[in-house]
Amino acid sequence: MKATSHRSTITLIALSLLVVVLLPLNLVYGSIDIPFGEVVNAIFGGEVSKPTWETIVVETRLPMALTATLAGAALAVAGLLLQTTFDNPLAGPSILGVSTGSSLGVAIVMLAMGGVVSEAISSYLGILLGAIVGAAVVMLILLFFSSIVKSTAMLLIIGIMVGYLTSSAISLLNFFSTQEGVHSFVIWGMGNFSGVTLDRLPLFAILILISLLLSFMLVKPLNALLLGARYAENLGVSIKATRNKLLLLSGVLTAVVTAFCGPIGFLGLIVPHIARLALRSSNHTVLLPATALAGAVIALLCNLISVLPASWGVIPINAITPVIGVPIIIYIIVNRKKILYFN
Amino acid sequence: MLSTIDLTVGYRNGKRVTEVLKHLNVSLYAGELVCLLGANGIGKSTLLRTISGVQSALSGVVEINGRDLTAYSSKELSKLIGIVYTDRTLAGALTVEELVSLGRQPYTGFFGRLDEGDCKVVRDAVEAVGMSHKLHDYVATLSDGERQKAMIARALAQETPIIILDEPTAFLDVASRIETMQLLRQLAQSQQKAILLSTHDVGLSLPLTDRLWLVTNDATVIEGTTSEFVENGVLNNLFPNRNIAFDSEVMDFRPKNN
Image 1 (tube, rainbow over the protein chains, first blue to last red):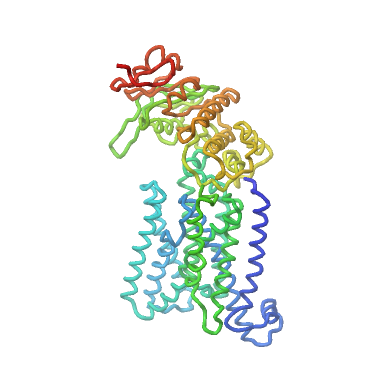
Image 2 (cartoon, one colour):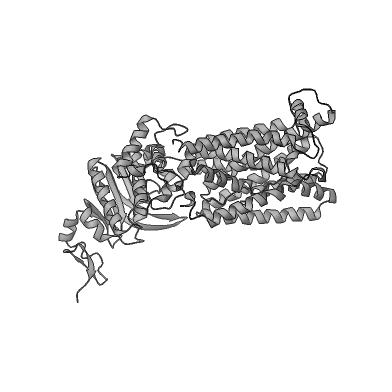
């Protein structure tokens, strides 16, 4: 498909510019005031007047900003893949229970370690594995029901129910766990982008960039799916294989982010809508990159807000995302008759 | 072009087999518009799904160009049969051009990029249904009739010799229904396509179709032209137990005069 108009080009450029502006802002602002010039020096290896400043910028703020960028893009794309797969604009990784599945996996691993989240590699690899297995189990359950239940709306409700069951399992685990275990799990569950240290960043980045790249390769079947599964099939798309690939990709994207940053709500649900409204198009050729960029923008914005109280500490990301997300969802539901992609 | 040999369609659910339509021997030729006529819920959609390869037959064979339908790959089928459903889609935020372009997917490469030739096919398809002036309009802004035309253009862009439409006139007003039927008939002739559509609308299909596939009350399908069916009384006997008779003057069913 051809790009719809200049509007897509302008939107993509504007979103890229926002990323370029927000990324350095995330390095400059934080709980400690560091002059702009010193931040620039720290990043580009120049002379920094205080060694602690260099540590803060390079080892805390830089990985945090990059994590937010990648995590935002990953969750947003995961949400878009799920919305197209389920033919339902209100699908998303947290609604379908995929994030909760990851959380359960992480909870099991964390509580098994007695809440001692050490710096050892085995510790975070264990958490990553737990998150991926948890997400995969929820995906398998959804896949199993998708062969029985034809209606995507009903499948969505099954996803929500699976999410509740998973939450109850997490509560039960917490009930039997040590205080330290519960504490570290609760902190993790509030969501933050500071969990990825500089040395873990490459693994995080590689996993997400590969998954994003693979998603871009599915643009053609994604566009066919806009017409519904039956039309897509007539266009020669293998529905089962495509659906499995899409669910697998969105599962991996969600699980990787959840393992490192906690279950972050709303991003996967709202960002695809923001991108569609901005583009006035659901053509995935432009929608997919726009969603990834918009996800990065929103996550960087959330991260910036989270450090605003400065000396008081950092606000959990999950306290911010609903404040941005809920008004957007309500706006979309109220105006759905006027919104192109609902009609 | 397309023919069925002792085809039985229906559903298999575990060991339970539900036969919907039995022992069908009907054909569809290039250049003709054929209406599959029958009451709601009688199995028209099941038959169309089987013929288009979406659902497998209980027994018998569907042949396209003398080759068994099941021997075609899904890729080959997508260049052979274009389908138009009445499903609502999430395509409102696509332009007519983008929607019709989706019909080129069986021909385009990995990322679905269109070359000059594809673009021309798309423009021609849109023009063939008389929607060129709406090429850059969003699908969401179209009327039901225009949307149906856009979906037909999408099937045309697929460049398949056979086009199958499931109740294409179901949600349209009278004017759009007649327009759609005339459009399809004209397309069948001018582009030498074999077009099959299902409908329960007798009054509309009889005067506008080339031939009929008629679902009878013993769960099979017979084929013929409208005048053949009127002459041999098939239409008049279509509802033997009900107080309905066929009136050949208005070409529609009426209550029996007692």
